[in-house]
Length: 69
Image (cartoon, rainbow, N blue to C red; front, side, top):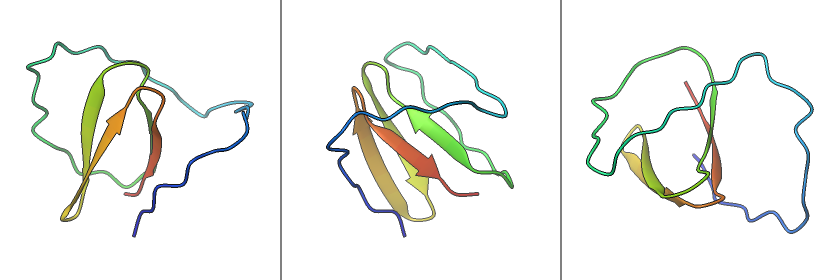
């Protein structure tokens, strides 16, 4: 289960194994995917819905989620 936990202090990520940045227009709908790795989803601006099993999480500017396989 995923819980939202606000971060009270700034933090720093020192590195990634890989990182990708995607920009979509407002009307883009992602059909979904299936993978065996964790994802970190950070919303720089706008809003996005992340689905995990039957749960839907809405993220806004500055939100971050660790998304399970």
